[in-house]
Image (cartoon, rainbow, N blue to C red; front, side, top):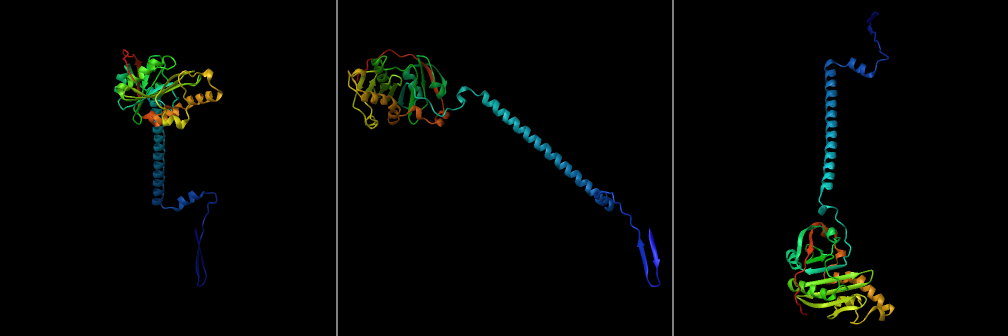
Length: 289
């Protein structure tokens, strides 16, 4: 509504304005906007809603996919065969083992007469039981390790141990043998080449085997060796302690001669597996030094 006030030389028109004191700002904006601007606002809101919806759906799909992948990985781990289970960081030192300078596992298997062979992990191979079973490792730095209860022990039959090592060495070349019994401090180490014993020492409460010249590695480690006929009864306490140290130092001697099984790294176990089987020794052959 307009009110016109007239004066002699002045004309003034006053417009009456009504304010909506309780109207929200959005309403005022809508009332003051043109129809084209209102349409643009609704389009913007729709686009924003569509974008948020796509974002929400994508996020849900991402998390569902990640969950399915994680579940598949867990099922894969659970279904893996024993050879692919968790790799140990190290292995315990066996009571007897051979170290053969060779990269031919088949030749070692044939020489030992291993029957019923099957693939076997390092961990299972070092834990096998049964008096006729052996584990042949894959080559490591040019050496193949053989462990298991089927290997001879000098305290049981030192002559058989001698012929066994000569037999293996005659066919495979450089062969080393180690044996230890920590509870009784029995120990033995042998180095043979092409059927000949280069160095051997066995102590089982008495000297059962002492052949060849003491090697530099034995001297460096201070390993105690006694002559034939010496027994625990005629040794003093100092000598007995040195013999006990022999048992503890066998792994270090093995490391200097070839390989220390207890010092192998976990990546060696992960690369490949060995084989295990039963040992049926062939007829004895007469071996000479």
